[in-house]
Amino acid sequence: MLNKVKYVEEKTMKLSKKLEYELDLIWDKRSGSHVNIRGFPKIKLDMPTEFGGMSSAPCPDELFFTAIGGCILTTFIYFKERLNLNLKELRVSVQGTVEYSGPKGYRVSEITIIVNVEVPIDDKSKAEECTELTINYCHLTRSLEEGIPLKISSKIQLRS
Image (cartoon, rainbow, N blue to C red):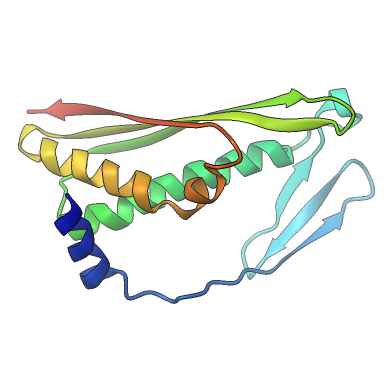
């Protein structure tokens, strides 16, 4: 596997060395905000009702977990293309746990991610390799792994 990872790095990792993102959150005059990211349609976020919000949109925690799942999914797709994996279905399920941790309030205590993949029988080893590369290269989970317990697993279904 080490030689394949090196090959992947040499052949496909000719990407920018540094990526920077900028966005604005504008208070909606109630309990949430509108998020402006580049030229995309605005994303709305709100606080859950138990914190005085209206629950009219996803809360920041849900968007945080969405970003992590999105990073896993798009990293998988990136490697799927390079490995010529014949992918039939891909679903990433994320379960995040936030717990009250004392005087400083709440903290993310655990994130569980399941990568559900469906491929033809002949592509089982490619799907396993793609999953392993995804886990090794998703920059968001790698950035979080020392501060938050992460459990990442995969389920590969074979289709004849």
